[in-house]
Length: 492
Image (cartoon, rainbow, N blue to C red; front, side, top):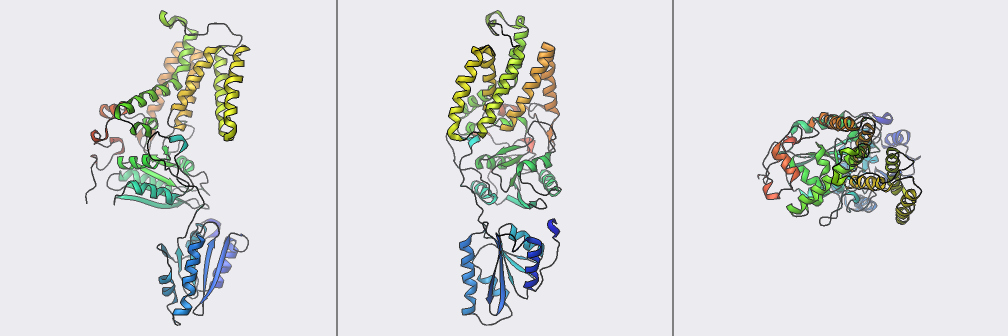
């Protein structure tokens, strides 16, 4: 274990425990690590705690109850049993080793030790600092719930449990990171989820050997799916509790990581990243229209610039009625270089928007739109058509529900633009084909990335194209290998 911890049993001597905490954990050196010593029925009792992670009011209440033992109980050899019965808290646990003691204290629990006993009592009085549940910025809907996941894993599991009150819902908790010991929970519905998938995820999490996962869910993802330098996301993230609950009911397995407001959904395909809660908060017809518009945006973000540049280089490909497409005036800067500069400029603006304080973001947008864009056209650096098509492609990028997928598609667009510039028509056709083949070759946790398009599954593909009404969607996706394919109420 980290920091020299062993499976040493808890000694009877409280002085020995205190020395251990001073030498190994930093008691006395770290201001936030503390010990409270009491005398109860002529025996010493110690509380170990970390300031800032505990609910002080609950601790004071417990201390008052224990101090009251002196007034109501006689001397006895069963002090530990009396102490345990007097603790006014619903969540207590008996621990037997020093390693458990240190882990519980550093996690925010308090540990109560009684002189002469070889066990301790861990009381869960955690009160982590954090914000209240609120709607995620990247997954907003016009109608729907405004609560979302936060950085506290207990709050996140509660938000999920509130939506699925099923006895088969499971949250398997474990700790990941030799030093950070971060809480990670695997969530699934026992009689729906694929047991082999659950076991694979559990083994992958147990096999993680790293000091800490301070970057939380992203670190977990890199260990589980081993993405390497593939830009395409192999898991889906969500900060909406309703989206997470929906995927649990479909048979997916979710991973909750403490300190992260995002939940990992597995397994996922390319088309999972194109879904958005807004489609299911509208009628099926409106939801289908919204979905098609989104698909057009994603296609534009990927293919619009390479295709337009192909028509610029080979105008004879255009039908006579749309022959006006292309620059209407010459420029000293090659069109390819204009596209790359404008696309890079959009990326600069995106990064600047992330780092710009909110009160200044409007001013930055005006500077970008009015001054940079218009003046760049006036001085001849860009032709208007380049700004138009780069902007439309950028809007398509932002219309992509998954931020990770939008960035990956930007990679694909740039590479496709390069091969089109070099090889023209063969380059565009070959580049698009290779892109599709590469996506088709990707597997995430043994799940084909382009399912149900490749391999083709007609019924599932129709559900992607058309948002069906909930009463008509009675079959769970076959890709998750659900144990119970038919959606129905759980049997009592």
